[in-house]
Length: 287
Image 1 (tube, rainbow, N blue to C red):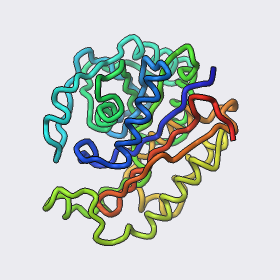
Image 2: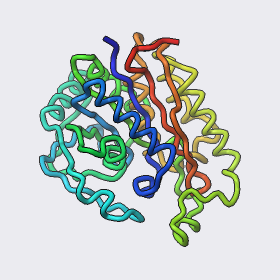
Image 3: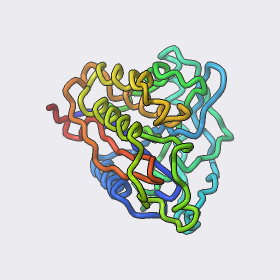
């Protein structure tokens, strides 16, 4: 049997939870496929939790609460029951330590919308056992590739685990145009085209994801931070680290030639590009 695929999802603004979109439809499709293929665990790295120093943490709060979600009706998320996977949290810490990373559990962390927004969209009938792994606030891309590589063994068929990174392909809050959302609750309004530098980086991001596989994927994704327009697309590095995590998890030697797809894309707030990628496939298709 083939390894499970790895998803990179751009979670976008909070309104992506409340409004229908191509991305939301794709997230549901990916969730349905995961359940159909017997997935029993989800391991995620988001964009809103980073630890200091040289450590990484794994969420192990047995009863986490949810951070508030702006511009979304409470009925969309309040009653969704989170399902922390405490045994998997311990397992992830062991795998990270075995790879030479300083890791520990965090028993007080409450979940943030960057992760549970995706879970609600993927698994509306109920949250599968889920483990959240933090970023490290030094935002070293190669460090986060190592994190993904350390957990890549969880893709083995016997593990029944799905790895997800949730960040953003183009996510610069300073370049977003907020007026249509604030005045009319319209996050998809496009009163003008996206800025050229952001469209260019969006294309570089797509090319890195779709035109590389195996170790070349890791090189291509980390190199994006050296692009002249990277800082235009990402004013801060937090929403890019999930892509490095995904490249680490999906960039093994045995992944050379594995199929990759961009399943959906939505532009929000004029300048934020929410691209959704799947690296690998349930059938292990090579191209």
